[in-house]
Length: 252
Image (cartoon, rainbow, N blue to C red; front, side, top):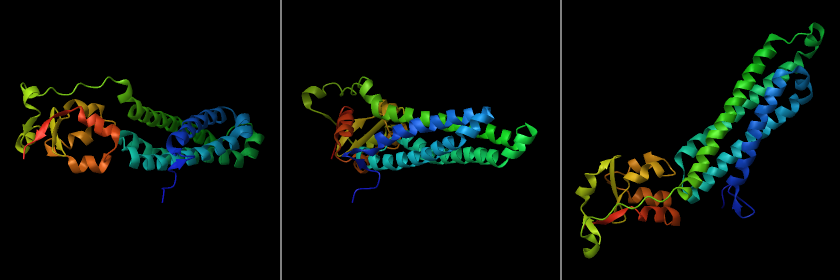
C-alpha cells in the first residue's frame, strides 16, 4: 500500500506541495505585518490572514510527510530533512500568534472605538505575531535553500575527480587493500571505507554529500556496506557517485 502523501497524478507530491508552503507562509507574514500596523486593515483583512495562516500549517505538514515518503525512494538529505521537520511546528505557532491578535482585536473592538486607542494587549500581540511570522518565513527560506542544494548542488558542481590509483595500478589492475589498511584511514581528513568488497576514498565527498558530511564521516575506516545498502540500495545516482571514488578492492 502506497504511503499517504506519496504521489499525485503519478508524480512525487513533495515538490508540488512544497511550493504552496513557500508561498503561503511568506504571504501570511506580509498579511500579519499589514494588520499589525493599521487597525482598519486588521478589521478588513484579519480573518483572511488567519485563514491563510491556517492553510500554511496544512501545507507545511503535507510537505513534511510527502518529503519523508520521497526520501524512502531517493535517499534522505539530512540537513533538509532536519529543517523540514520543524516547519509544521513553526507554522503552527505562527497561526496561533495571528489568531491571538485577530481574536483579541475583535473582542476589544468596542472599547477601542470608544477611546480611540488600541489596547496595550493588542499592541503586544501584534508585535509577537509579526516576529513569529518573520521567523517562520526565515525558516521557510532555510528549508527551501537546503532542499534546492540537495537536488541541484551535484548537478551544477563539476564532479570531483576520483582519487588516483597507486602508481603502477594501471597495468596490474585495481589496487588491493586489507581491512586493516582501510581502518587506518578513519578520520574526516582521511576517510576510506569499503562497500561490497570495493575500497573508496570519500574524503572529498564529505562536504558534497546531499545528506550531510556526518553520514560519510560515520563510514570512515569501516565496512560501510550495510549503511549504504540500507540507505540507497541499487539506486542509480548514489551508486554512480560512489563509483567515482573507488581506489581499489578489498583483499580477501
